[in-house]
Length: 243
Image (cartoon, rainbow, N blue to C red):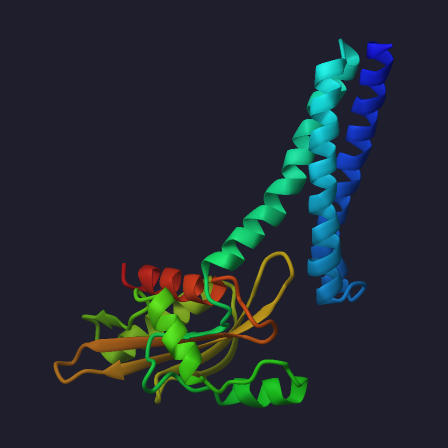
């Protein structure tokens, strides 16, 4: 009887674990293809995937306790599936709770880089997020991301601009506008899983000693919180540019 019970628990755990992983796996492709709304992908499938992960983990542990031989091996595989189904939603939730719910980050909070072509593009697309930078967002950015600062380069402004443009292209971002005379770049970056579009503005300023200051801004088109994506994008881009 214990062997039969262990076998049943192991099989059920494996089934629940597989279904949970499938639910999580379709969130990105489902949203990108238009089959799922963002709310359905994040609030429903992510939630059910995590609940299934919990159930699969519990069932797998029970299967390990009751099973012998093959059922025990099945339960071990189911445990891996269950824990994996828990890992991604928990990591997502942890990342979201660790940062403020903002989506507009800039190195210059006084005179942030402005969007021209991107602004027109966003109006045409009727993107949910605007390009105004509220004082509350600035205050939250300063508190959460004090390291987001301008980059100062020893290179002349024209050279710094070309270096920044080359790095934008190397990143695979879509260049929306490039203005060598004004040393201004506008581009669109696309996130990996959900393929969210975030718009980037870069500005290279000349300093009195002939060196350069680089300012950057990154704004999401959709979503109240970017889960830290825009700050990370600026941090990594300027770090690479400064090397």
